Length: 484
Image (cartoon, rainbow, N blue to C red; front, side, top):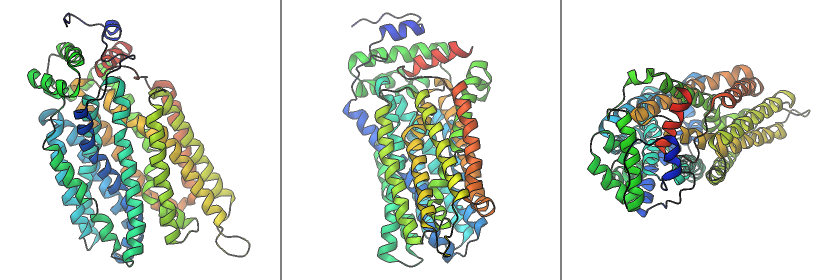
């Protein structure tokens, strides 16, 4: 086959390239599946290590005699590390490659998991959870970009959102292991087993990535076109590989084949795209999603449930998250990114108002002075409704847009800063949530989240672009034309 070279416009990208337009029929090659399988173990670790603290806190707070501030510090220390890990890993991945940084992050997971499980006081726990957070934040920034750069355009949505599926699967595994380990071992020390369980997948991630290549776009960006072609021939058919390499070369030609820097973010159209991505990520976190994931047993306890009942009920959160993420991955084949984000954000807003209303109008105790379980189960229903919208629509689209909307020249840097913003917002919410719950109660706390979520819905309606049905190069040309 002969491919004519020359300047490719947005129009002939879409109309002539059979490998990357909206009508593309490109298949997922077996090697691509293997790459995604190993890379998304980072998502599994992300999910487990953020989810396990929800149950472990019930027992850590007794052994280490934690007050609300100390609980917030232990929970949010991982998020502080994650913010730093995302910022640094995104930038470094542009320099040394996605594969090498994932290997380093797998090492951070092992150190953090073993260290936190052996901790005997709050400073030790905080220190090792910061290290663990570096791993979590790093994979959050790098893995979606790595998968997006390896995936064919027509299947990129489904493959990138497998990262979200692995995150919620990791959280479900954490909830189940929390309940099971507590039933098996009982006592205060069961939390140590909860925290160390994720060491095995971290080791598998490290060994698996030893044999994976870097993405063809990273190789091309660093002047290794022969290596880029070699990888493309492993993950695409020969014809598709030729087309995709041509697109990459044309885009690099526009960008002078150099890695991006902070200065490039000041380019007006790039800055607009960057700002939209960062604000979108911030609003996704300000719905309070991770306050629910981290503090679900604590929330349910505060609404009247016992410790055992709260731990068991939290498993329902994990099950709903996994099921709805599968639904979200399926829907991405039919619905645009922007539409799904709006559906998810508005669904979250409704659920947050629902929890606030339940907390305000239904008393914690009934007329006999007994715990009002109706209130507890209505709060649980509100949490499940929230997770249906969050995990079935908003969260998968958030990770997908972070991986695909930024220009290739600054993709790692921009994704790193966006995920840094995510973790900073997450850190702030997790740090203040226990104290906010004590002061404002369930109704006041969730009313605040609901009002912020309403503003987020308006922002997405006005500014969020649609990227479905385009290759990464086509998205870049489209956004450049839109915002220049």
